[in-house]
Amino acid sequence: MPELPEVETVRVRLEPVLVGRLLQNVEIFDPRLTRPFDPAGVAAELQGERVAAVDRRGKYLVVRFESGRVLLIHLRMTGSLLHGRLGNGLPVDDPHRRAVVRLDDGSDVVYRDVRRFGTWLLLEPGQLEPYLEPRVGLEPLARGFTITRLAQAFAGRRAPVKAAILDQRRLAGVGNIYADEALWRARIHPQRPAGELGLDEIGALHSGIRRALKAGIERQGATLRDYRTPDGSSGAMQHEFKVYGREGEPCDRCGTPIEKIRAAGRGTWYCPDCQRS
Image (tube, rainbow, N blue to C red; front, side):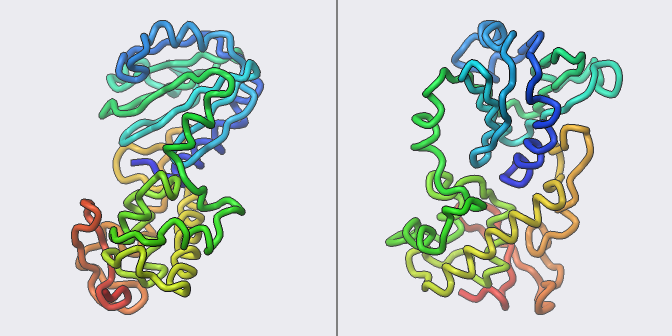
């Protein structure tokens, strides 16, 4: 599933080709993409909008229009946005193509999604923040993400720290991959109760989260199966995982074989020596 580094990579790549462009023609082929709203109606509303900015909030891509409207895109498990020209670099017979946006410079933005869990939501002016506020918490790469605020988010929580990190209402954009990578960097066992972490451990985790996410962004995200950047290329973070998916391989720090357990209902990789319970 695309996490913050993957969505940020998509944002950075799309921003220069979208900002200032008019959505000349919009086709939405999958009713699941916009449900409960009619895809033809949403496509008609999008047509003629001009892009003012491309932002990100957690795992959401935020396309802002000059009209004040916003298209909120969530890639979910297998969604991807590709930019080019249909028939000239972008295949015209892709069975997983769910929407096509023709821009006024003649190029296309294609949304493809194998599992069909992704969503497009068109919001009217003033609706974005009320929609996101109950769903998306602290931005871990923002200046306001401090050790104190992370400690406040975890205070009193009995849930495993892995579960606390994955709670999007408290911490935005971190999913299974980067949670494991951050906990390894912080030397914290993923099943430790979040509310029992000391201030030094919270500080280490704060640093670990930032470092893991920044590493992912620098390497254009991680491609395990479906994720692609808008030009169709793969990310490279998967070649530098410290623990994720590396069961039985030696820890880069101490050489102990990486183990896999279940934490927060998710497959979780950690070093049993570096990250003792």
